[in-house]
Length: 638
Image (cartoon, rainbow, N blue to C red; front, side, top):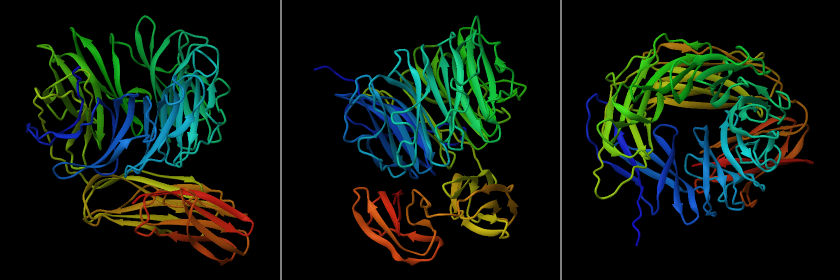
């Protein structure tokens, strides 16, 4: 009988002291077959979703596992196959975190077409999946591949992919979904570009207003030129039929990254190759106008054989992580960027000549610090070890100059390792390390004390479906902190619409609030926060101009949604009518009548408080008022 290798998913805890300590290994998943870790998604406060693939008779299938950190270990929540009713080959995964309650995953699925179709799945923080068979996004003849996805604060989800249905070289298609998994654009995808010749490497980034920017490399009339198209919220192209070119047509585009920020617009970083490799940056305004030169500004060209490892955005700045050759070794360098080029005068050498090869450099950010980590193949032998470095935004090294060894376990180059910050500043590592009875598994830890002052970041207000969608990030929450959300209108002075008294400590938390708006005009919002010493500060005022339709009947989306204890349903009546609001389950079975009475014209609101025995899941609410009726979906998560 052949002997098969057995992969398991492990967890390493790297605690916070500048010395090293050993800890027990906690084995998370050990099923039959090989598991390959794909991604670790961090949700609210020490909650994680692990996405991994597992080989079975059909090939790799996608699975997930929810888990929560406790004081000394991890508690496993719900988990299993992304499509419990379907056993087929699943690959080429893309993920986006819609909000702290919801994750969207898309992949290529071979259940019907051996060449592959595009499917998706929604998972909430409790591990409840949307559909046992997945959501069909492009279920057509012809190969689909190279998926990219993104989402926005309004709950819109965007997927783009390379599609061979009409061209053997591949074109670019896209689709938009809402929070209920419903496709909003053309069935089986909206064609972004359909030209003879290859279009490939599609990438999507939301414009935070219901639309999406899509990039691709085009070989139809060049050696590989980078193009950008903007699709607005209705599915209409904004940059002409063929998009806007970004790169020099005489150079071959190797790779690129897209970033969008409400203040700075779309920023594009790309690398091109001719006789040498170069890196450029370009900015596009919403109307497609280039802010820099025709092909952007040059950033990197002085290094031979540089490779871009990571590029992440924080505010209007970026951290670039790249590797370069140095006397037969590779070293990692970090640089902070602005859209005008380098804004820090020095380049930090994160790792010196300790490695003959550097594998999989990655970055994890927490507040003003960056954890950079990599696998290192030592010069002395074939051993692969885990190293890391912590740097601040001013490029100050927090650990020793060449980085700290986080683990001297004998890793393999194929082992995937993902590190994340915990709320108490511990660093947790997840790995699909090859394991057998002959190998010792250990964990290491390094910590640094961390205690910061309470503050608010990224206070933002947007409008969608009758709601002011308000979002902010609070840092270093502790007992005694209060947050008060205030609103001012043309007919009302400042009033409190939401408040929080913090009872437990949290290093970072994303908070949301939805405000129903039923009148035209300007709405002003500000957040007042009070620290334990009773110091009062305000965020800058955010102004929202709203044009609400005052005529006719209308049923608003319930808020909040998803919800776990109570939600509000708002509706408008043109005239006095008998109003009936009914709740249904996902099988369209009537559960109960929430309201059945005559009401006057105007805007009304009713609370829905589910009974304790109502299971989590998808529900519908229907309004009947005279000849008017409407139905909307809502998600209940306990």
